[in-house]
Length: 408
Image 1 (tube, rainbow, N blue to C red):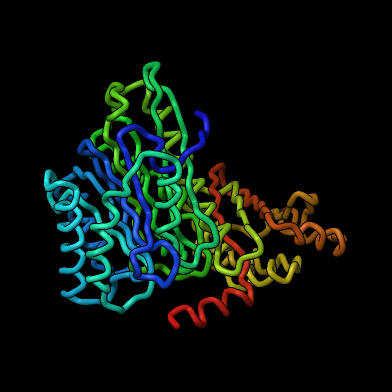
Image 2 (cartoon, rainbow, N blue to C red; image 1 turned 135 degrees about the vertical axis):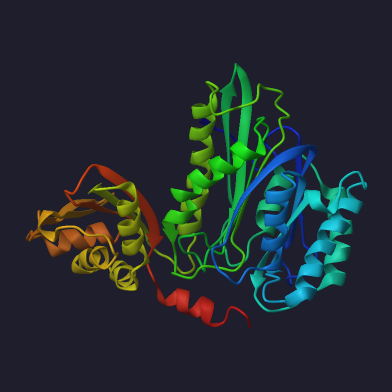
């Protein structure tokens, strides 16, 4: 497994484009990812009961049709809480894209995603023109992959993309992904969109199973602000253009592909947290010694979603009691007398708690550790051998500023 240069067009058989259609004032706001060959499609979607029109449309494709050719994404408008009109607009976007691609595919082979402001109708005349304009821009080079990665962003400050190459039966296979997300990020998906494409050959059923397993330890283990969005979507396409043997659960290449597939999702999930709105710190919570992996997941997420933990890291204050408190109210039963706790960064490591007993520490040294941009919390509970990791960020003045004026 090796990381290679290139973006969403790195796997064979895919083209992409990103343009400024006019939904946003200046920045690119419409992206298209296209596979010439019909691709197996799988996905995961928001757990919010308020679901945007594109989520409903894409879920229908994933569950009912299992094959797709394209993903159209607009930024600047979420098409959420827009009623029947929003659903009709979403379906029209898919139909217009299918027609513009030559009419050889159907609307049900075009997934649609939207991100941006909630509760505002889509500017359909602008989008119609944008769809007509973006089709001629489809290319398979790095520049057009970058354009697509930029066009899906909202408050993000940088593009998020990765491509990994592996070998299947001696032939190269590539998995690539792009994502967006900065705020309204919380476990069980977030205001995040993630698109993964591969030229491997897999059934939609196996792809769906792999997506479910992968997001449990990637996107569902991140949090920026505790808000779960209406539009969260992960879509994966596998078009088989590498012409390698089909990957099945019993094939020798399954674990090789799974490792790379998981690595793509984890990289993108962590990139989203690193770009958290107003974030200055990237926080990793490693929880070990729980009775089950689910217990470790719950505790890790409880810690990285705690506002008091987040503000302590923003203030560079080694207030470790907040960390233990967040673990304690997570809902997982454990004996505090067995807990050990440490924090570390590039500046060093410091133990704060050993088997339930506080450890005296140098506040200046602790401050030097907390002044780094990336900090790790390590907690051992002594209840078993399971473990899990979650990623979050601090909570800053800038976050309040960004979101206080997001719509206006």
